Amino acid sequence: MGIKINDFVLLKEGTKGIELNSVGLVKDIKNGIFFVFFVKNQSIIEVSEKAISFLEITKTGKPYEFKICNVCHILKEDFKDFEINQTDSKGRKTTRPSCRECRKNIDGISLKGAEKKKLDDIKPKHFFVCPICEKGSIPGVTANLVRDHDHETGKARDWLCDSCNTGLGRFKDNIELLEKAINYLKKYSNQI
Image (cartoon, rainbow, N blue to C red; front, side):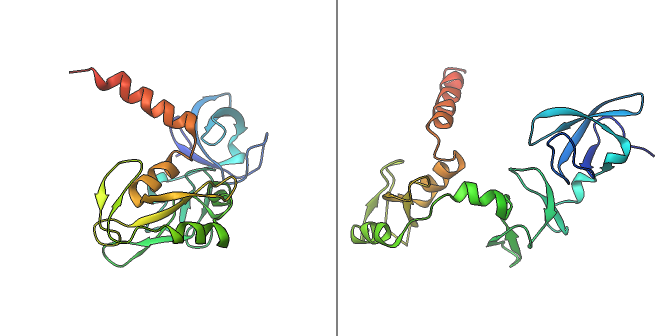
């Protein structure tokens, strides 16, 4: 059984700027040439069958040995190329969805000591209202507070609830992405 249209494949030979072990989806096959949509590059590249191998996509990620980075879309070794993020309800370690290499760009410049001290000096102790969601909470009891900072400069911004800080991170602290999210919500807000 050979590779078919709509099969996921792994690039075994680097080609046309696509990295080794990049994940792609076969879109077409003509005269022994495979037209593969590579997820990271969002482009279709022509490759020979010897340059790719079938990838059983459902056998990647937890609990398998290899997983696909959600940024570079390259198959990498779990727990080696991915940092541990948290522990699940059964006590099993879970790794971040982005590989260590991609995390360097995501994490940016960390909060330095002097900037951390600035925030620590104004840390709410008994009651906190998040400046984004305006939810009131008891710090450390009904909400975890997080030091928020600019990932491009390393400068402190303010204390946020962990949900809002995660939300900003999911949108990469990018104003244009947040505006797209707002426009998306506006588009569907008047539907009944």
